[in-house]
Length: 402
Ligand SMILES: NC(=O)c1ccc[n+]([C@@H]2O[C@H](COP(=O)([O-])OP(=O)(O)OC[C@H]3O[C@@H](n4cnc5c(N)ncnc54)[C@H](O)[C@@H]3O)[C@@H](O)[C@H]2O)c1
Ligand SMILES: [Zn+2]
Image 1: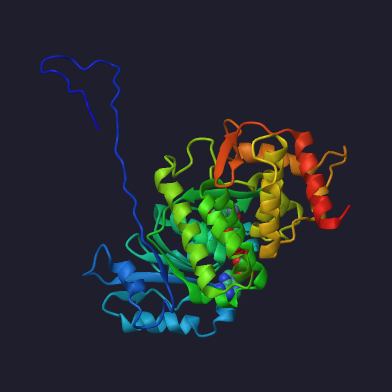
Image 2 (image 1 turned 135 degrees about the vertical axis):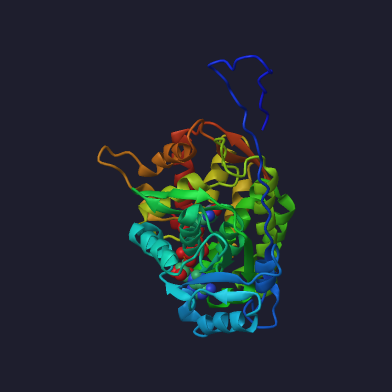
């Protein structure tokens, strides 16, 4: 802060401006491990005590109900882990199982009840909130933590592919409201992210594959070599071979983290959405299908569409759209949904509204990433509706033959 001091003897004027300035440094580890709650795995306890090793730390642990159902000993394992490290960890209560899945982001009453729960457990700003679950669940828990006591530190344990390679490693959280996705939320970097590959074994096959779409996305806009690797390993990824999945997740997480740390706008104050390639239609489509499509499945359609569009408008060399389409197919995606063509009463395609909604989310100028090359995204500020409809017709023909 720089303050202009009043000279001795002179009267302060009526007007003054003090320039306030400070910066806050964020850092958090993103671990990749297995058997996170095995007693001899030090990752969890070390992540918590890393700033204050001599203290005993209080924790509240919330577990996604679908994860708890697939891992019946998990609640017990977490409690036993805390017991085994009792000199450093103290659970504020037994780990609590809370509903998981996208619908939890549509339930404001759940936010209130979890905030109340934190108050009942006397959780203060020295404690930690730990969320173990899918991307939707962690968005909810992160929001609850960020808004209680103006921000309690939270630890994310993502249990889905998408959570581990994308949403869990970032700085955002939030819930859906007033019919809009992620409308209420905050930028609140986690205290630590602990990715345990073991959890992925019980994921629904659809969710395993869906998360790979984010890797294709980030490869397309940032890393052509990674795209080649995905292409060469498509079969292993489709079968969710652990080694291939682990490599895919790490590279994808790394590219997302790099963008947040070095992209110059971690809290998205500008209007650019550099990691949202293929997302303007994906977000709209998720809604149009009543969330029948997983986020990653909708993103895969969005990628195919915007890659074809990039070719049509002369940005990407012809053939690129076939490469992307073929990779997505080999990974196991179905790239069409009848809801794509939902129309309003005037006969206008609702999907096209996705562009305006995309702009509105950050405000300011429209910024859409398209492809200049495989591995190189480029921002544009307008899209042509007719070209979009052509790209849709191309995709529909490829998938349905009509
Ligand atoms: N915060 C961000 O920066 C960010 C970025 C991208 C996406 N997102 C959000 O992430 C959400 C999607 O996350 P997702 O793809 O992880 O879906 P999800 O959280 O809905 O999980 C999918 C399903 O799998 C269940 N599940 C989770 N882990 C499991 C496991 N190990 N075994 C068995 N079942 C399990 C969940 O309960 C859910 O029913 C969306 O809401 C999206 O908006 C957030
Ligand atoms: Zn996404």
